[in-house]
Amino acid sequence: MSVKQFAGKKPFPEEGPLPAHIGVIMDGNGRWAVRRGQIRTQGHLEGLNTAKRIVKAASDMGIAYLTLYVFSTENWKRTAEEVGFIMGLVRQYLAAELDFFRQHRIRIRHSGDARGLPPDIAEEIREVCGDTRDFTGLQVILALNYGGRDEIIRGIKRFLEARPSGGELTEASFRQYLDNPDVPDPDLIIRTAGEMRISNFLLWEGAYTEYWGSEKLWPDFTAEDLASAIAWFQSRERRYGGVKG
Ligand code: FPP
Image (tube, rainbow, N blue to C red; front, side):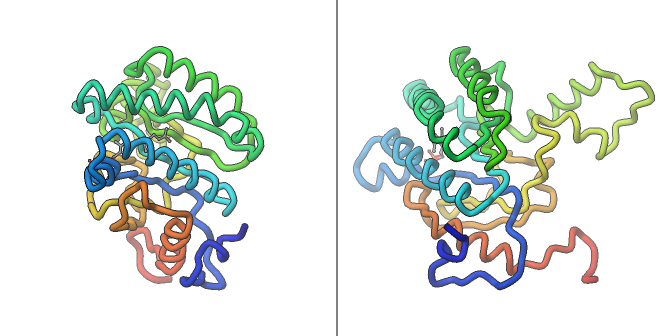
């Protein structure tokens, strides 16, 4: 299915490249559930279904990279029940979707500190990343136990450990110490639930990213909304701090 078909009433400009890398801050699961008189975890369950739909849509549209902010380094502050529930969803997602990943040639990757994850989840991620590593379709990067500041600190530590001979720490040389150095910086970051905050997401990589906010809560977010965000992105003129050429 083409992006235009997704765009519905908001047609895409005839020209304009697709964003290669889209990041998503999937916010509003808790509010979605509370507004329905349900417990917060029900919102996460519905949020997982939305994530599956958006992965499928991004794959169909020909997006190259999609980073989903699943669990931040700050999310451990939530109740043990909620944390356990989200981890359970991750487990379920990785185990149940392998055939889907194979069918659509989707490569799964991880960003964040795997050492801080429950060992079985860290192992499951390692396996799925390994099983899908040669797939050349959409790359889905699960930001899990991820924090932008934490990624930068871990990167600096890795640089110091490696101490490359004559290696000066520069913006370009530092890049290879990020979690996924080969993944291009996000062109577009989408945040749902009406908030406009970075929330420690892709701090280094997002220096020149276009931000798009949706009032919709994440469980209500659709493939058409994704297409609208892309259409908006395509109408933007990116100058990277320079002037119009
Ligand atoms: C933010 O909403 C959402 C999260 C912290 C969890 C996101 C997890 C999922 C969508 C499920 C797992 C997905 C995959 C791909 C494995 P919130 O709870 O902060 O919402 P609120 O601000 O309304 O309380």
